[in-house]
Length: 211
Image (cartoon, rainbow, N blue to C red; front, side, top):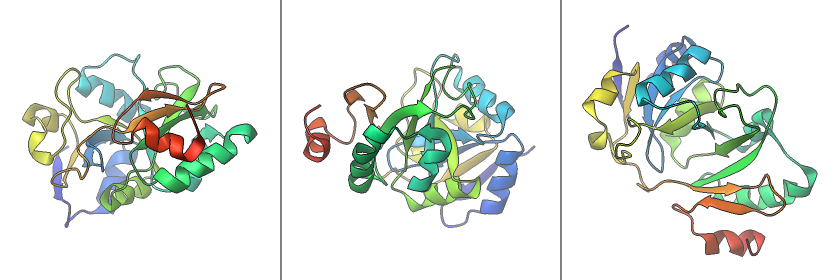
């Protein structure tokens, strides 16, 4: 099937939806960096992500969401963590904070590398939100590059070889932040930052206290 390239002001969400639910893979812009994603319901599409990235299955994907209410579709919200999650969501979503939560049994193992947790985030980019919403509001995603190569922060930084390997490419120019998200693990007794990215530790501590 021929690869489709859309400009950000001329995308067809129906075509994107149909390609993705039929095992397609998409490169698209987010607020942080460019991502590559596939439908959560397409095992073949999810496997393709690992194949085209030349990546082993030990590295999990994260779930980008279009709305905060979709978190409960794929993650378990522990009662004792609910207030913390609400505070973080109110302050940082949409935005560059990925929160690690315990996954629901319905989440395919391939997304989480056979683990019990899943990273969730809502990107602060309307175009990304629309693409994610078109396939049901959840889009398993990782950076749009061959493993070990530079993470693309703009359309121009995408490698030609990588673009050839997918079904749809969306040209959204330059990602507004151009920096990876911060990853915060809420599955343990105390919150822990696994990667400090666009949002600094001190900023998170202003919201939920010392971590």
